[in-house]
Structure formats: structure tokens, C-alpha cells
Image (cartoon, rainbow, N blue to C red; front, top):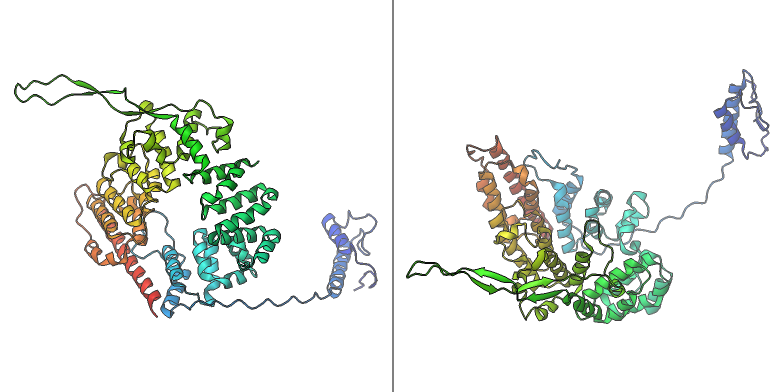
Length: 565
């Protein structure tokens, strides 16, 4: 076959692009100057075009210059932690290989959900300081890639070798983003010159990691380092750096935070105000106390009718008496002045919220809780919370006190606002919502949390307890575990389907103390169904309790394997 091609030494610039253009437009339409030789219009044009493309392909391949060989990667760093016991390593392989998931409803059977046990296994392994088998690192990184909730514990367990792998595989780059400083090695914090150089020249992630590490060790030194470049930082960076001051926050940080109240970024100002309000002795807290006190007072003029008991002698009722009942009166602010805005009060209320109540809530939230005993006649927090509030301001006032108790980590006020778990209003609706109660529980010690939630479940059942259970320490204390199991048993006896309690049952599988498994054996049999029971509910409950017992025993085995020398 007669093949037409350009001279071997002809420039190839644009030749391939010309061939592609001709193929796209068609050889009948490609008549402009610069058409490759042999590809003009005519019946042989298509064949000539393919021949020219073949020649050009050979030219391009033959003319390709070999690239410089890439440097071989450095060996992976050593992991000094002890290796996993063999049984624990086999268990990890099973947990990582399992991809089963629940559909969120319907029949789950009796098999444990291994994917939900992996976070607990990782937490236990990290607490014991084990290193993973190197061959399991890819599967561990793949699992963490698909589950953001798993990443902190998975990357801590994976150790330095995971970061080494992440630099070689784009699919695992999340590990570099999730690790402070992108896995970079920080200088010794005692080396002032290296610390200052990294702070001035490092990448943003490296600087955040450096500031966080220094803050946890020497809070004053971290703040002084931040002050050296504060004026030149971008607003979004200032916000992130300022947030690191939450660690080790103390009175010495007040002057710097007071200056940040004048920052040109609204978010920076708001964060500075929040941090200052968490310092009850700060000048901002004192200013907020003065403003909040002006809005709240005791009103002794509120009258309440009291009817005495029936007289025993004559059997006639005495006339009702009128007595004054101390009541909290609220007068919300009528404006948000510049001083309030500078101290962090957001002037514009959200949609559907009144401006005055919005401003009032922010003032009370930022005022030190010690303000109220002095302002309200020396009363204790329980006595203050028990006082009636005029004009439907109770919910707004108590909600602000809840936020203040959480921000200031005040356990005494949290107890007062929580009240007794057996009280009717604890189950809602009430002045304090269940979501607020869950946050208040977070300020208490683990044993006190468990006791309160157990009392709540005993009185109000499980239907409203899910978010409260999520706050409690794992494994659940025995009183709480017994309360949950007893409530589940009551629900089973009522004849309803267990799917209504699937969320609590899932928590129980992960949070009940594994030692409770033996006490649950009596619940594995299919119960006799009451007359009004849902069809087949007893069998479903037997399956649910079987899965619970199996999961508890599996968790016990996991811990035993990790404790094996």
C-alpha cells in the first residue's frame, strides 16, 4: 500500500491536533490550509487520514524522552508501641472485613452489628497503647475514609505509618487533613528559635498544630506567640487561632481577649466575647452582670389566694387569705446599644424571634451565675429556679440560665435547673427542654449523670430518654443499665414491637456493661403474648434480646483479647 507521511525531521507541533480536527469535521469538509498530507477531499481521504494518524502515533511514541526517575520514598517510620496480641489482631481483621449495616428498621435477626463495635474496639486499643499490624493499615484507612466518626480514633490507632501511606495514595489524603499539622513533625517546644520560625513560615495547618500543642503545655507562651502576628493574620485564621485559647483559658488571657472585642471580624468578636463570659471574674462578665441585673428583680406585690383548712370544730371553711408571693419580674432591654454589641450581643434577632427577648437571653447567658444569689435576696440556685416568673418569661429566663450553666460548667446550677428526675415536668414540656437537660447533664460527674437518667427512665420510660442516654459515660453504671433493661422488659410485656425502641436497643448493645449479659438470659425466651399484643411481637423481642446478649458477650471477649499479654 502506498503510504503518505511527512518527512521524519518535519516539526510535529500541531500535527496531532490537525489530524484530530480533520477526523471530527470529516475529510470532505477539511479543506483549509494546513491539512496534513494525504488527507484532502476524495474517496481515499479516510484511509489516508488513518494512515497519517498511525505514522504520527509512532512518531509521538518514538520521540518520547524518558522522564527522570522519581526518588524512592523514605522508609515508613517505626512505630514504638507494642503490637496487638494475636487474638486481638484477628478480631480487628473481622471487624474491618464486616460491611454489614442495619436498615434502620425491620427485623435485624440475632447477629451483632460489627460495624458499630469497631469504634469501641479502637477506643479500647488506644487506651492500652497498642500498634496495629502493618498489613491491616490499608483496610483501617479505607474504613476511616468511609466513616468520618471513625477517623479520630482510627488515625490515633494507625499511628505515624498511616500518614506515610496517606502521602502515597490520594484516596487517603483525608488523614493528612484530619491530623493537626498534616502529620508534620513539630519542633521541640523548648526550642524557641524553631518554634518561632515555624510560626512565621509554616503552613496554616502546621501553625494551628503548633499553637494547640504549645497552648496545652504553656498557655501563656502560646498566647504571646499569637500576639506577635495577630495584626497581620487573615480574619478566618484569627478565628481559628482564637478558638485554640479555649484550652487552658484563664484570667491572664483577659487583656488579649478584650482587645479582640474590637476586631474588625464579627465572628472573632463573638468568639472573644464568649471566652470572656466563661471567665466569671472578667470585666466583660461584670458588665454583662450589670445589664442583666437591670432586667431582673424580685416583685413582692404579686398576690396569691390561700384557702386554710376546714375548721375542725364547726366544720365550716375559713375565708381565703391573700398573701404576697415573691416573683421574678423581667423587663427586657429596649435597645441594643453599641456597648452591648461590642461585648458580643448580636443585635439582629433570628426570624420569628422577638428582639427584646433575644437581647435579654444573651445578657443573662453571659452574666456570671453568682450574680443571681446577690440580686435575688441571697437565695440558693434551687430556690431561685423555684420562683415563679411574671408575664411568661420563665422559659426564656431558664433557657438562658441553662446556657450559662453549661458555659460556666456550674454543677450546682445544673442540678437546680435539672430538678428531680421524678418530677412531672422533667418529662416535658417544661421550662427546661430535654435537649437543655442533656447539656446540663454534661456538667455533672458520670455517677451523678447515670443516677439522674436512671430515675428519669423509672418515672417517664424510654420514649424521651434517648438523647439523655447519649450523654452518659460508657459502660453505663449498674443502676442505669438496670433501669434501661427493666424499661425494655416492660415495653415487651406491653406487647408492642421492639422497632419503636431500636435506638435505645442499639445504645444498650454498645453501652451496657458486658457483665450484665448473664442477667439477661431470662429474657431470651419468647413470651406469652397478651390479648392486645401486636402479632409476632414476642418473637421479635426474643431476637432483639438475643442480639443484645450476644453483643455483650462479644464485647467482653474483645476486652479480654486486648488484655491478654
